[in-house]
Image (tube, rainbow, N blue to C red):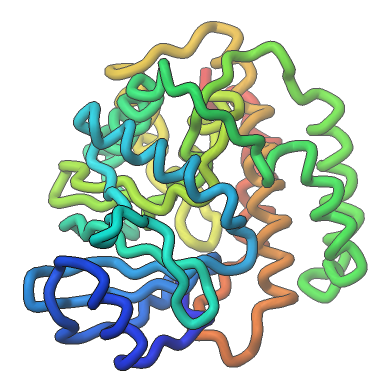
Length: 317
């Protein structure tokens, strides 16, 4: 989440006039994240999220994302629906951008997860996978393994400005992971970005899973590896209490199963997750506009995670 596109009160008021959700009271930009422009909107009837889609989100992908969140909500998963206007339209245009009004869910994102919170998040991910077993729509992972060489090429010349030697280090790791990447593990619809800031919680209870704009069809165990890499380290990429990662996996197992082959692949999949986020963070670090209301995320935090997984191949045993 971030703010790249500024929305005036007048334009937002006109936008809301097409809905039955009251009149504008206030709107505040949300600075976390790096993908879209987001506002917390209060009206005379309640609170909502306004999202304007930027950068990597393609207009043609939005129906997949919304079908996925609708399917999950229909099966009792705590996900926000995109709201239609009076004419039944979900996708609008605001300030020249595709835009949607989305349900607001209560809860806060944790910055230092406890084992109990990680267990709940793992269970929520397992329930998400279970709830999508019969989900038919397919979307290729635009940030999947096939995209990583291109991402690397796009920023390779400037990687050493982030840290000397980073270009060669990432190139070598990328070659090794791609050469070993599995093609025979179960696939399905996955979230692909379930960081702590995309999980809303009240105490140890998950109240919302949000930000589905990287959701896609890919290896389900890869989603588990992404989530493990996001929850088992602090913001700087330093490992936290090992019980957190164990609890996440234990929570997942209460709602979904991993085969022996999937468990065996998790160390490699986690290294791939580290490279994916290192590369996209590096691209954002290099290319984010100086005047954007956005918090850039340190790509080196994922280099440190990568090095930890390389040094601890039995982390998921």
